[in-house]
Length: 513
Image 1 (cartoon, rainbow, N blue to C red):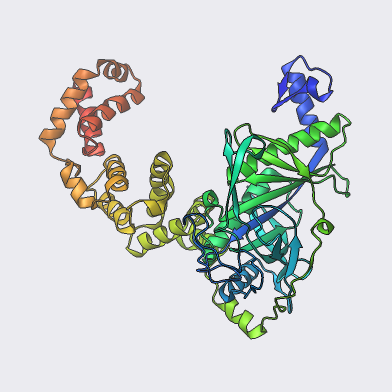
Image 2: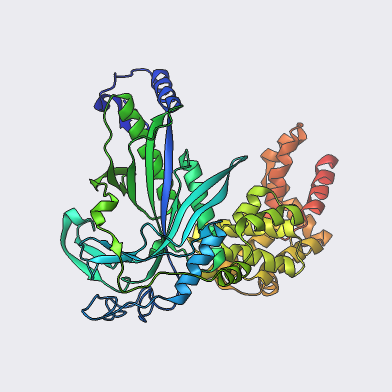
């Protein structure tokens, strides 16, 4: 029998023959244990150049073109810190309520892998620049404060492409290494193990992503590797203070992947412990296609990397006045923006959350309101109709020609009674495809609301003739059947008929005979 992705007999558990027994078993196992989750999020900064050299920080350039003696680790080359990158990490730390250390230090993290040209990574170890922060998240009706252990700076590695049937290292015929990414400024945000469910981890990661984008320090494009996440999860019995055996999950390239991987691992660990099995500390790989995790390697400890201070870089000691200046320049952050939308525009909390999930969406909404559109109507169009069209087309807002003026014009035409909701949705769909002006689309497609009685009478007569079933149902007392005839009229008019006038005509005509 399969339960939540597992065969009970394969786990050494007693076979369950009845569905209600299986559900009861799963409920008991889930209730007896709790998860302890912490996230390590890596953020590539959007600086013009790399962390310790003048090479361009550019995604998509031809392989091994943005390289130099410094980022390739050639003898005699010396690193020079990127001032803008240091400003960006301080911005991140302040936004996450961290304390900025009076002095921090770069270390060498030693390990040998083809994508590390120097055979060590310049990173921070025991003296990071940002420490002891926190971020609040909303999960349902509950607000949770998640601690931030540290925010530290390091350089990114190169990119290895395994060429073969699946792109996996164990099935590769050979590997290609691109060092363009080596040396790109990378910030790691390490949370405390304060999350207790995949839902909380998902909310934390989404809030962190929105915050980073609002700060303007990264484009946070997970598909390009600008934002990556590793999840640490352990399991313990409810009421036990001691932490369980920690497993780190790699290859989480989206918020959905994070959620799926944690749910799988949560159930795997609980079922194993319930069966009396011993969990081991290890790093596991998340298989996107199969939706499961698999052993990758044993988990490294800090001593495995043989950290020692970077001899070519002095300590970082930011002036307090400079830090204060960076703090004063921070933009409005997502949490404050959500609260303002709810209080000033009377939006629902969930709607406000959707609007501030990305900077481009929030900016579009702000601009629409600035053009005079009703905030609630604007929010509905952005979070529902426009979001649905973009999702269907698998496009990001920035990839379309939709502007704030487009949406503001739609809201205005609806308010004036010139355009029906149905017709406005058709216009928006064409706007997404072409970027044409709203008035031009409305005129070209003859979508302005029709109130002319003769035209409406013609459509109503045709709809009554062509829909005898709903007409008869309505006459027998089923009032809801009128909507089918009304829908037929709206279809004939391509959404341009005045629905209120059509309903009145239908009621009069159907009551006459």
